[in-house]
Amino acid sequence: MLKFVKNHMESITGIEIYPMISLVIFFGFFMLLFLWVVTAKKEYIKEVSNIPLDNQNQ
Image 1 (cartoon, rainbow, N blue to C red):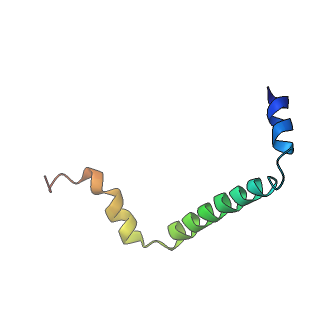
Image 2 (image 1 turned 60 degrees about the vertical axis):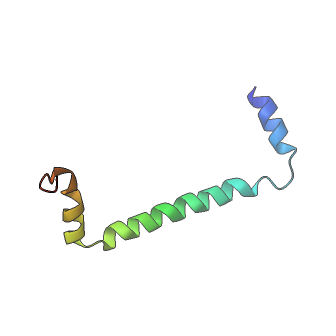
């Protein structure tokens, strides 16, 4: 079954760019997420982490 898929994919021209594009998107997303986590204010993180425990608003 894997031979069939591999042979079929090799016959498509220009398909070798798609794994590189997906790697760049994946890497970029997690780098942006990492930068957001590093630069987030500690007060905001504390406030958001206490939302599930806050029963006073009910």
